[in-house]
Amino acid sequence: MKLITASTLVIALLSANAMAAQDNAYQHEASVGYLTNSDEMGDGILGVNYRYYANPVAQNTSPYALNGFLAQESNIGAHYANFDALDLDTVGVDGTYVFDSNWFVGLNYQRSSIGNVDLNTYGVELGYYVNEQTSFSAFFDGGTDDNAEENYGLNIRRYLELDSTPGIDLSAGWVHANSENNYNLGADWYVTNSWSVGSGYTRDAEDGDFDIRTAYWLRISDDFSANFAISKIINEDIDGVGLGITLTGRF
Image (cartoon, rainbow, N blue to C red; front, side, top):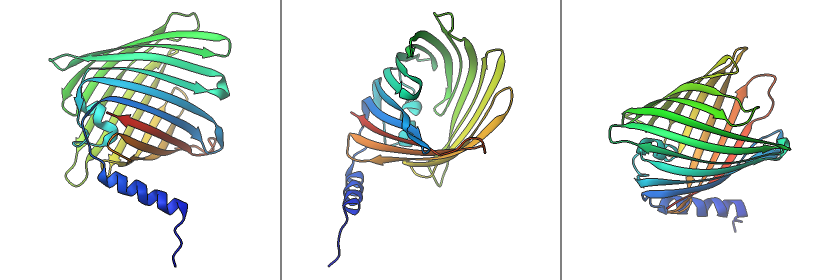
């Protein structure tokens, strides 16, 4: 007689549910997640997010993680994050309005408490959807407090559809902060609508780092999914592996 372990049963149930899940369009997205490092599992960031889209967003036409970006719909959102290691609590709201002309404008406000210090920051972004898979934008972030830093920059993002697999998510950014220029590049190949593998590069005034990463979006039911992410910065001075898990509801 073969014994069935608890983990085997859970995997089987999840697989069955994932196969049966319907990719219905959604307007509400809520998630709770935890991001940490394998060397300090208890010192992670807990995050809670909610977003509402003005029109239904399709899930069955692109990778799940990119549905919101590719929808190009007006939306509003709110978030909360806690990082005990720095005694940091953050709460914020944001919104993006997309015009019929494909221009869009975004606003955000965030209040952070670090120990006994409170910071109020805000941001504005102006951008344009070049086509159904490409966006370009400029942004400015500032604050109302003396120790709030101001920065500005540019972002470009392009989803390149492929014939054999869903596609590649490409991104590039430039940020000017503290009289220094910072750059970032990213590429994530979606092997399926659920699974991606990718790499990124970030550079500041002194040096740069590469990272490698993979993520998987597990459909649990019609309304719920679990998202898993693993990343590693290629730097001998940085130990451990980045780990993330998020439970997402869409309805």
